[in-house]
Length: 189
Image (cartoon, rainbow, N blue to C red; front, side, top):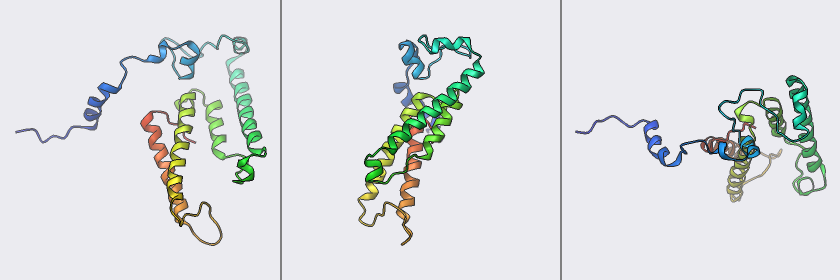
């Protein structure tokens, strides 16, 4: 008689993972700049890592590491948020048709992660790009499904409580978080 023991989740995923998982890290075979973008660091590399070999990055070896971190934190955060605000404040469909705010708060949180917590796995460029792309795609798809409902109100007003706005937001966020975990590119904001 067969054993009544259930296979664990690890065993079930392990069988499927044999076909999906790569045996070695392919990022080490990519050109240097692409492997750095994907977050690859050679196994023997120790922080602080060598800067990229092009100016102005090649000049960084002449200043203290802490000063370099402070400078890039300020320059990156300032430049990124400035660029987003410049685009959003121009006369575009964002401001004229949709009356969108000049900036969205998650951009500030992303700037803090990207430029201040540079060693965090959540702040790597791959996670940033894929996390935002997947979240935008999931949020747009779910919102489009809600818009099909003739009783849908896309905003809150003083006339009533529209529960579908809250359900849409919660469902979009939770599904986006799940999608990020499934693809292995979690970026919180």
